[in-house]
Amino acid sequence: MKPDGSARTPILEGNILEMRPSPDGKKILVSTGAPEEHYSTEGHYWGPVHMHLWLMDEKGIRQITSGNVRDGAASWSFDGKKVYFARASNVEVINHDELHTGAPNIWEMELESGKMR
Image 1 (cartoon, rainbow, N blue to C red):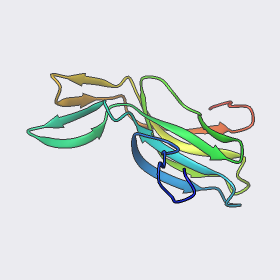
Image 2 (cartoon, rainbow, N blue to C red; image 1 turned 90 degrees about the vertical axis):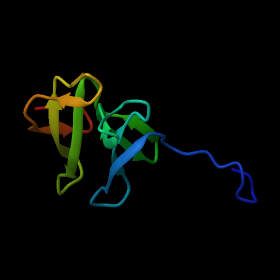
Image 3 (cartoon, rainbow, N blue to C red; image 1 turned 135 degrees about the vertical axis):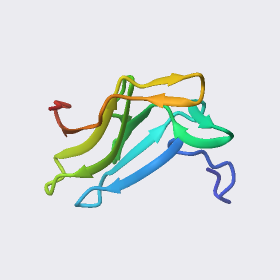
Image 4 (cartoon, one colour; image 1 turned 45 degrees about the vertical axis):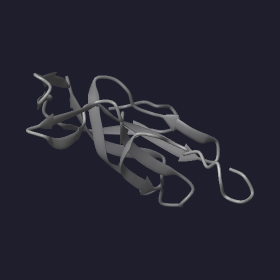
């Protein structure tokens, strides 16, 4: 960005669905979907096909989940060391207008190690 405020560039592009600040306010958990991936029915936009979680902190921004999934409804642990989120797996779009996924489950991720259960 230039001193006059022009030439701004976004930190993260895509369909930003949720933003959750950490308990200490030093990190932000973001749920986003790819802008080019979406499904619709009868002209109604229903949202991105794949959704993933990103972590923004003093180090920058990094994607913390990936794959053929829809991750969202994220929440922090009280100490900010873990995140909890809903994950629907096996995402599939049928005929460009019908989204099929597995049943959503709740997952826990330790941010330092990336370990999930």
